[in-house]
Amino acid sequence: MDTQLEALSRRLGEHLLARGWRLASAESCTGGWIAEVVTATAGSSNWFDCGFVTYSNDAKCALLGVSPITLARHGAVSEATTAEMVTGTLRRAEAELALSVSGVAGPGGGSPEKPVGTVCFGWIRRGETAQTATCHFDGDRESVRRQAVVFALTELIRRYA
Image 1 (cartoon, rainbow, N blue to C red):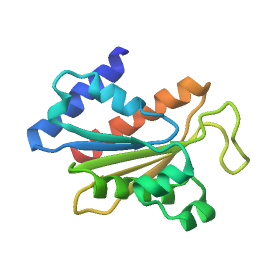
Image 2: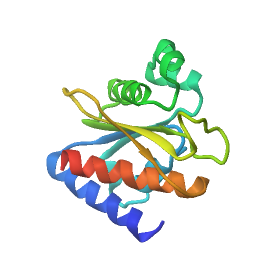
Image 3: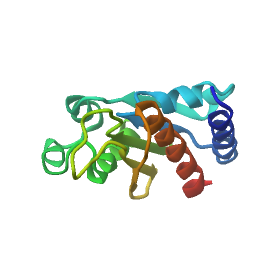
Image 4: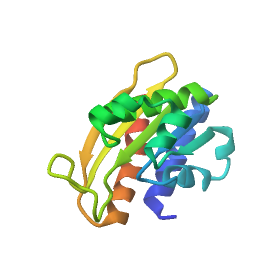
């Protein structure tokens, strides 16, 4: 694991441990990379609860409770969908915080409205309302996915540390 991701995970773990919180994740375009980053950190079993990789729309609905209507109206890559993903994650986990990510990593799959590099995120703390954001990252598939992991973890720290 690269040093930036390792440092982010360690920092996140320190913040979560200090508060007695655990994290759960729901990932689409990052394919479990966030869960990989945090579980590569020794001691993360004390602050990481679980991760869902819901790549297909069917999995988003079945495992996280995302509404088919939301998917039909907004698409998988939308703040509406990541809000439902993160809310569903927290409902199914024992964690206090959750994050979600869904995007177009490329090289194909983009559209004029959602070009390659468009990634949507969701974060939530138990008892609060989901927060969302959309970013547009440049680069190849791996670069877009890595930037999404960095952004998701950095924002989690910024919003809840």
